[in-house]
Length: 343
Ligand code: UFG
Image (cartoon, rainbow, N blue to C red; front, top):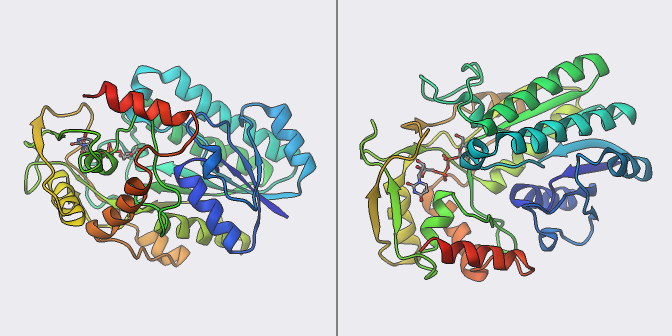
């Protein structure tokens, strides 16, 4: 039996693929390479450059391989972009889920581990955020993930599909050794942006607002190392294999770091001053987002290990300093152009 990893050439998916292969699993990857990189796919996995929305091609892959389970990472994931292009997000994410679930039903595949997001909670009133917090997304991206969760619930009930929906907080870092890592074009995430300064790709960092209701006035987020996140996926797979009921789990380190704390930690990792300026608030940023991951700890037996800001940034730095322009093929030019346009 093989595990189908949708989005296995992306940042988190490619880390999960490696962990699955190390665990002796047979892995089949489907990725349309819109934001993923063929170079991130390791030998040992069967790779198809196919879009999950292409149900004919997806069906042929289910036909060819004995797919027993699915891990679904394939989605567009930029909050700001989703506000400008909501229909694209609903098409790629929601319709992608529709096509995947239809194919799973047709082929009798009954379990799925799904990449959800803390974005489903919007701006929660209570911190830390547990799974009982209201679902109130503030962006088409968050809405698409909330809808995808609901689709799994309804389709799962009708067709005996069980799911583990993993609601990620701020994912960062890279695999030990720095062979793969985060590469987005455009890059919007704080840690890679901060590290662009010591890489010589950016003169300074703009801190989006310093008048939030936090100790130093800058936004607080819960940064979770990608390898800890992947551990939770393996545990969720195991949970479903043991007959676990469909459920949702928050995945964060339960620690909050402010934007300024991340800049300071990055300075200590790279041994250089990272100049910054204070800019206006970014629309839609809540003051503080910190997870309660008690449920994942209790039910899945998960323990995040790399929770210090310096540890997370150190592993990201290893990847970015080894591969300043990310992956090799033509997406490299996309990244170059993006970096150029931003200064
Ligand atoms: N920030 C800056 N300057 C920058 C970039 C970011 O100050 O140049 C700040 C942001 O305003 C925010 C913090 O750094 O306060 C973290 O921002 P990111 O863009 O790295 O991450 P977000 O918290 O906005 O988003 C993350 C995930 C999303 C997910 C969301 C859930 O990346 O996919 O959490 O709330 F939807």
